[in-house]
Amino acid sequence: MKWDEFAGWGHKVSDWAQEYHQTIGERPVRAQTQPGDILNALPVNPPDAPEAMEDIFQDFEDIVMPGMTHWQHPRFFAYFPTNATPPSVLAEYLVATLTAQCMLWQTSPAATEMETRVLDWLRQGMGLPDAFSGVIQDSASGATLAAVLTMRERALNWQGNTKGLSAHSAVRVYASNEVHTSIDRAIWIAGIGEDNLVRIPIQGPNRAMDTEALRQAIQADRAAGLQPAGIIACVGGTGVGATDDIAAVAQVAQDEGLYLHVDAAWAGNAMVCPEFRPMWAGVEQADSIVFNPYKWIGGQFDGSVHFVRSPEDLTRTLAISPEYLKTHGQDGIINYSEWSVPLGRRFRALKLWFLIRAYGLDGLRERIRNHVAWSRKLHDKLAATQGFEIVTSPMWSLWSFRLIRKDVDLDALNLRLVNAINNDGRIYLTQTRVDGKLAIRFQCGQFDTTEQDVMMAHDVITEIAERLS
Ligand SMILES: *Cc1c(COP(=O)(O)O)cnc(C)c1O
Image (cartoon, rainbow, N blue to C red):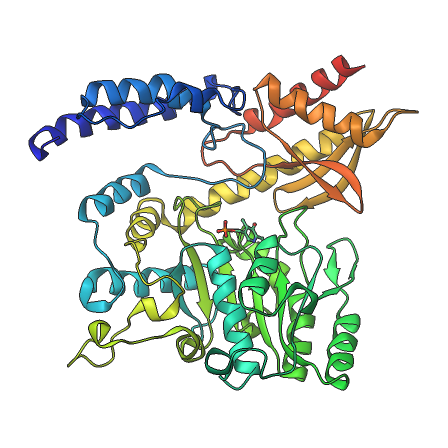
């Protein structure tokens, strides 16, 4: 294709995108295809000759679309949301058009300086002190890896990268069982080893780390000659929204001289609303925080916001400067590739800039508040419905429930229920385990969802549960 044909196709794609979003509610939420359907519809061999754009686009509609699960569907209540907004999608189109490699300041000063400014807007919008600097990482997993590497290097007096880990006593990191699996993987990749990720028991309705047990575990490790390095706390865990008492954990981190990383990948989004901030009181004491604007506030995948108290510690851990990457004659500039594991970087800040300007923080706050209120309304209704039990209470817009019947295996019954609901296609839910029991999660956070969409979940859940008997 030549660029002179591009605008025509661009129009066609944007017409398609608008229509898709306007009629998305008519589609089943979860893809209804069987494993292999799409693979079998795709030719085994690549084409040697160029194909017409018309044919490629037609196959996109005929082959690809039936195999898509619609994350932008207003009745997508599974996992966590992932939102795209019209202005941020347009920004992404521009970013793809420019395809700049924004690894260094000089490889696109606008991308670097925009990132600095927009992340500071988000910092302010979330009520965080100006002691934090922000950087966009590829994912929350990437941000947590960067944090784990930093805590490791700090604990090893900056010797881990040079000497390796065998030269030191075992590095220890502390977290509850409610943290995301990205923490385990960061621990593996950092060479610390799963056995050195110390699991702290939880307590209370928020399923928070027992900070006394945390303190004792650190002290016992130190007495045993091990090397405590850091604590990873969660605010809004993926299973059922577990939230640590950040102030209490931060006090332990401070007393013990440990690094504190806070994973608020989903719930961090809610902090644009001041009324939710007491849930992470003490967060200003953290060394780093990660949240995913792609999840709830609509700056679509990918890109995670990583706030750090000490960019010096982060770059001391990750910066590497061969001659070809040096920027001579420029002082005081930021090269964000020195703040992350990958070298190459897309211009991810542009979509956040479009988004925040087009909605204003108030527009984002209004959506989050509605989602939380509607989710609670549905929770109250199901809690009052016979035959259902609430397993975990709402944490922001996330809670869990299960169907109760006498003399049956409740785990199997609820697995059948969630599968039947997803095969029906009107709504989409996923399950988790809470203290070993199978529970069905509900969360709402899709940007265009309405109160009616949310309350319709009650009709679908009760109707399908009825049919199961
Ligand atoms: C979604 C999520 C992650 C993982 O995010 P990625 O950007 O996919 O790495 C980590 N932690 C929590 C709490 C999450 O909800």
